[in-house]
Image (tube, rainbow, N blue to C red):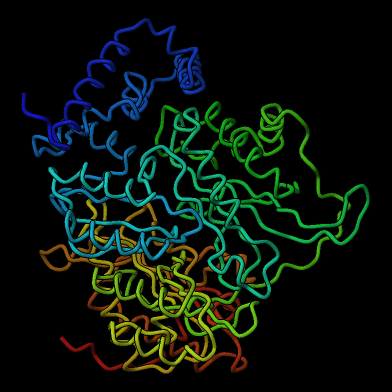
Length: 586
């Protein structure tokens, strides 16, 4: 008998697992109700008992849990087929996103806790992107990586390649806890309150090894902010842990704690709210677990638009929800009332770019500009080589779609910068390009209404040729209402739309201004400024708006955010209308 090769053994393993899974599926429902999926099943049962109708995604999860559908993933890869119908949703539990019609291929999203990769992992990902994908990778706004243009027959090959690197895509999409973000400068930042790396890693492992936490009604985001220079944007997450120092007060021991925030979802115009609860670092994993389980029990399973934590809090009230969390946690949570908390160290809006001294004397981290978050595999290997030669053999992704190389000695900064430039990248950029964020856009996402990455680069080229800006400005372009680029917290937020022009439909944007996040003391949702602007008309509109700021600010240090908050929208429109600009070149 001929010995089976590795691919055949993999197929056989999947076939056998499929038979076993089919037997489990046909077993009595009561048996599953006693297992790790029981919290999800019980929540679904309550929904139906109360007269609710489960949405299609909930019915599919109930029929057979998505994590038990690995044999289907293997079988489709063997026959070179993409998923159809509800299977497109279910495949996301394994990190595979079928993105047709934008691209007839998979996108694979990883899990990289705290955004930190080893040199070996970066090189391995470059090899995987070349062998099984499109030869590039995109940094996401969760300090994560996505590899695109994966053919159906290479889906399992990609997942196996990740496994061999000590990485995974498990639960990176659909109704799951997404990549755990932490401070990009954790452990190297002179101003940080707490090094978030161990917490991000511990929570990531807890999630991967806790089957009940894959029974959520919708996606869930968690972030740890350690008080470092590069903002983590924890207030945009369902759970935000914000490091702080308690320096005194009644009935509370001085030391480092995390302030607990709940319910952030900026695409629905809500920041995470302070709960008035303080959590010790060693308590964070158990507290997060209890919050997620309370969300599993009380989240909406009848309406996908209302199934996020924000809507549970709106319906139940914060106090009632916290009471449910405390039941699951097993003890009352620590109230901050009476505690004397030191002021929060403020982040640097563009601290993710440039050369910055570390807390370790004589060493620096270099923030590298990745144009709209994209790296070619040649650049990935080159950055890995630089990190190995001049750094500590690690690379740090940021929520700003850029990348840091840490632990570069003072004497090596110049040669390191030259090596980065040789890759076509840089550690310096204009104020426009430093804060430029764009989601995938319609080149790779079926939901997007415009080519956000392409438009972002054109917009930057246009503005850089006309304006000299001496203060940080963030421009966020997002392709749809999912707000992956978080347009509501940008100085200028652009939400893609289709615009009717004559008899054609062209790509355009709604414009929002004056947004910001708490870490920079600029927390606010951007306000509506202009609607349905064709992209060809957008660069001059932004030029007039920025010029109005530069001409009318009270002092040279007044930021665009401060300028916008000082005026109402009508006044801002009036000031911009007084600016004359040259027409945009075709």
